[in-house]
Amino acid sequence: MGSSYILIVEDNEAIATLEKQLLEKESYRVEIASQGFDALKKIREKDYDLIISDFSMPGMSGDEFYHEVKKMDKGLEKRIIFVTGLINDFILSTGNKYIAKPFLNKIFVETIKDFISSQNTSNKQNS
Image (cartoon, rainbow, N blue to C red):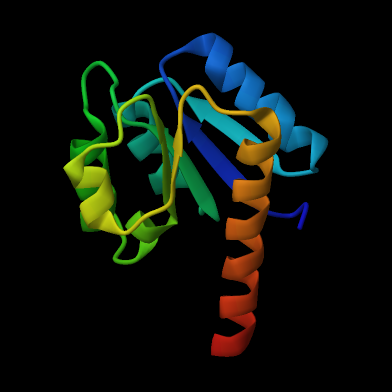
């Protein structure tokens, strides 16, 4: 479990720091990008098991970020969990998991753990 790499894409520093602290307590390795463009650069440089992304960000919206990730690596876009105050039709149309802000810390952590666990199970079945 603890070997998973997670990228948080969040322009609100307090929220990004909270998410990082919660996940590091669970032994995940976590990096933060404050906007979509920075996140795309990090994705080009490292493989992430999960991307936790805000939807409303300056410079690049969540849907633009999703489409850019999809162009980069087919399938990686399905490893995005949106964390947002407004669940919209686009988020629902992706079929991706999402967490509504404000969130309970326990719900946030459990959602991430469940996602990583299901990814690990899926990867073992495909091996």
